[in-house]
Length: 246
Image (cartoon, helix red, strand yellow):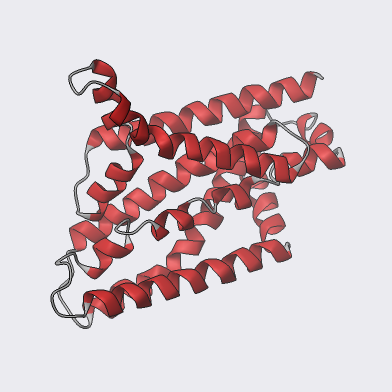
């Protein structure tokens, strides 16, 4: 446990020592503020959708997904930079396992990712001061953010173990995310009664977040996101083991 915490601490220091981290944070918060302002302005007009402001903010627009896919920018340097600089050999020959390295980097990246979302609590407070808030839906929305964050960070970490180049790692992660998001597009090519159609429906991330935003927590969604996260972390560990023996 001490070794794991040391890795988390090391990565958190690396995050906040990088100018890129502050650029990402500033851009992230600026875009979130702009989106929230647009949603409030749009839904405040007479005759507009009955969707709540927070429901629209958490997955009600396509712009929400741009916030989620910031994960590759956070994870691209985690292992790729270590491989490029040669420090990965030092790290892997120290008294830590590949699994501890992967989990430590994953936890640090996820904490940084969630820190980006922390200021959005202010939006909830602002809405609460003017209207009733469904706290169950708010809690479910943040649960969705956490689960999707874990999924995307784990995918980005896996991509970072596959190359020495940070840009290539980011591209690989974005490609993986496109595949995950593109699953619903396959639905139209399948027969509605087929087993594959049911599988595709179950893997529809767009619908998962829409449900979370409404306050619906389907355990099948939770299991799906956690299973993929575990799979990507397992593959990242195996990939790091191959790096160690090269």
